[in-house]
Length: 229
Image 1 (tube, rainbow, N blue to C red):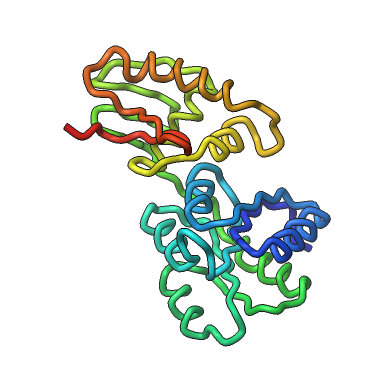
Image 2 (tube, rainbow, N blue to C red; image 1 turned 90 degrees about the vertical axis):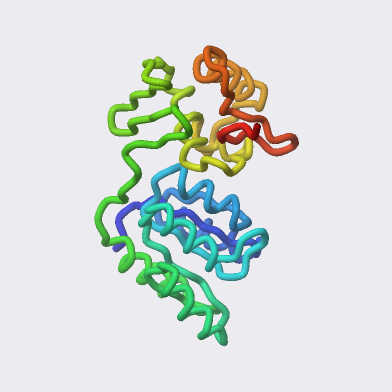
């Protein structure tokens, strides 16, 4: 029996994704599902999962790219890759990119559970201890934030937003991902609440300094990066 684990499903096929989510949820697991590779990378980097179920064929960033980006970012969450029956080349490339195991479609749900048991037996997921952008430093072990050597006191929500942005430094993070990660997947918090917290965060992290790091990405969300001169 597979003990309760946190599973991230990255699958764009609505029927397949829904069946996997329902089946794993009924088995007692905490399941979160996204539909494209870019969002999958952001969510996997932002929150700790015990295993990622990753389809090869995805929009925006395919599964091979997702696996490579996670491993390059020192995210070692076990990856179970889903492939088409005739995609042996994709299987080899996926394993080379950092996937831990693969499963060819179609497959029996019992086989999926067995593969999940196998890949989830690994140790704890290591994450970066210190995150930074320019002179902004975040010690994730102590939840200590400094900029230019000056200590910045943040509330838990403000800290959660900042850490998520820093784990995706240089890449935009959608409002949906921020809300799901910082407030919880089942939260009904509205976007204007997120905007209010980002405003408070900017007042602490950016306002006292000449260089602004937190930027709004119109129509998507927010990004932390060094402003272009």
